[in-house]
Length: 333
Image 1 (tube, helix red, strand yellow):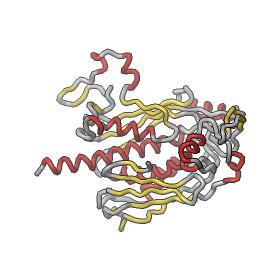
Image 2 (image 1 turned 180 degrees about the vertical axis):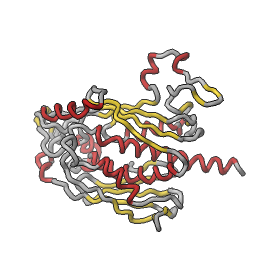
Image 3 (image 1 turned 45 degrees about the horizontal axis):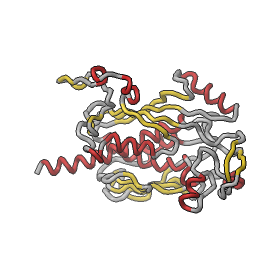
Image 4 (image 1 turned 135 degrees about the vertical axis):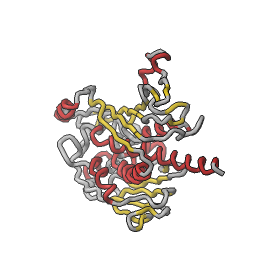
C-alpha cells in the first residue's frame, strides 16, 4: 500500500529514476495557508548533492502544486504535488539488472512481484521520501494552525554522540568504502491531550508504523524507550500535578492517547546498504555471485532523514487531529 491515514489521507507515487515523484493529499481542511514557500525549506533539508557527506546526485527538488490550493489557501479538495527527477543516471545500474544488492529490497521485490525496477531501486529507493516530505509540509501547516510544532535532532551517528564528531565519523566510513547509521529524535510540542484511540488506533502504534515505513528505519522507541525495561515503576511513572506531568518517560502517550506532554520518538537508522566493497549475494535466479555497488550514494542517511521523520510524525498527528475533530463535533451535539 502507498496510502497513509484515514481522515488526512496521502497517496504517494513515483520511482527513483522515473519521470517524477508525487503525492495526492485528500481530506486536508480548507483555508490552510500553503504554498511553495512552505515546501522549499523542508525539501532543501532532504535534497542530495550539497556536501561530501551526502549523495552527489544533483536534484533541485522543486515542487509543482497541481491542485487543491487557490490564492495561497487550501480549498478542501485533493492537494496534488510532484517533483521531477532531473539527474537520474540509470546506466550506472545496468550491471545490477539481475543481481540483488545486500541490504536492499531487490530480491524481496522480485520474489513478491516477479519483477522489479533495478534503476536505483525503483520505489524501494530512499528517493521516494520526497513524496513524504511534500505531504509532511502540508500536514505541518495544518498542525501549526493549531499550535503544534515538530522538530528533530541527530542523537547519534555511527555510535558517536558528540555532534562535532559526526562529520569525521561519516568521512572515515566513506574513505573505507563503507557507511554508518545513527539515531534521530523527533519531538512534537503543543500536541493536545486526547489524540489517538485505544486498542487498534493507538497513537504510538500509528507513529511507529509511519516511522518503520521509512525504508532505512529499523527501530522505534518512545520517551525513555528500551531503557524502561531496566527501570522500576516508581521511577518510570510520570507523576502528575495540577501544573502537568513532572516527567515524560512515556513520550507524551499513555494508553495509546496523547497526554498533552511533548510527543517524543526516536528512530534507529541503518547504515546505507550501498557500499563499494565486494559482498556475497545472489542473482535473481538464486545463483551465487559477488557484487560491488557503484553509483552515487550517501555514506550516512541520518543527515537527510530527520525531515522525513518529522514529516511522518506530522502526517500521523494531522490524521489524529482530524479524527478528534469529528469526535468532538459528535460530542457537542
